Length: 381
View (spheres, rainbow, N blue to C red):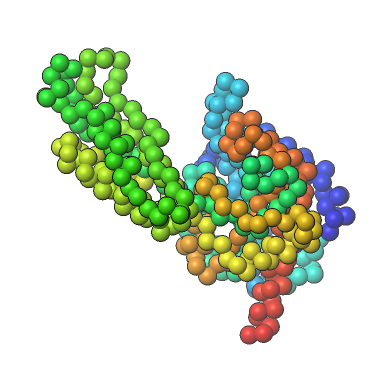
C-alpha cells in the first residue's frame, strides 16, 4: 500500500492544489461537485450526484457489508488580505483530497475485498445542515459503518500524530428579533428600548446553570439596534446567541434556559421577541467498535507511538448528525495531526500537505478493516 501511495502522491498534491484554489461556500459547491464528478468518471467510477443539493457519492465494490467514508466539501466566507471571499481555512480541501486518494487507492484493491465502500462528498458542513440534507437522500440508511476525518490544530495534536475519535461538542446558534417601540430620547416612557431589552437578556443568560463538570458556553455574540441618529430610542433590535455544550442532554438544558430568559424579558419589558434556531449541531456519539477499528488502522500505518488518545474539543461538526439520526450506524472521525497553524478558521491557516497522504492510508486501512469486521459478523451469524 505504501508503494502505491508513493506513486499517487504527486497526483494527490495536484488535486489538493486545485481544490484549495477553487473554494466555494456552503450550498454553492457547484464547480467542486463537477470537478470531483468528472475526475471519478474518468477513473472509471460511476459517481451519483445528490438529487436535492450539491455533492455526490460513489460506490466501490458491491454487496454487503457496506462501509461509508464521508468528507465535507464547502469553504468559509471570510476576509483574506483585505478582501472578503471563499476560503478553505477549515481544511475541507484536504479532507476531499484524502477521500479522493482513498478511492484511487481502493481502485487497485477492489477485487480483493467483499462488500461495498461508499464515499460521500457532503455539502454545507459549515452551515451545520449538510449532513441532514444527505440523510434525506437515503444513502446512509443501509451503511454499517461511517468514518470521517478532520485536520487538527497543533493545540490539539502535534504534527505526525493521529487519534481515532473526535468528541466534538454540541453547538446551537439562535437569532432573535426584538420588536419594541421607537421614541424620542427625551421621552423614554413613550417607547420600549430594544437596547435595554437586549441588556436584560445578556444579564439573565448568566442565570442558566448546568453541571459544572461538563463544559458549556452560552453568550450573546451579536447585537444591533439604532441608526445614525443618537436622539432616537430604538424600538427594534436583533441579536445572536451562541450555545455550546459537550453533551447533547446538557445542550437541551441550556436551550430550555434560553427560552425561559426570552419569555421573562418579554414579560418584563412588555415586548415581543421572535427567536429562531439557525444552526443546531449535535455532540459526538462515537461507537467503540468503529474507534477500535480506526485505532488498528492508525497503528498499521504509522505505529503505536504515533497513536494518541481521543480528543475532546468544544468545536462543532455536523458529521455527528449521522450517528444521532441513525442509531444503528457505527461512526467515528480521524483526527489528523499535521502541524496546522495558527488555527482552524484563521484566514492564514496552513498545514503540512504531506500528512494528507498518511490520512489516505489510515482511512483506506480503516474501511478495509471495517469490511473485514462486517464479513466476520455475517459469517458467525
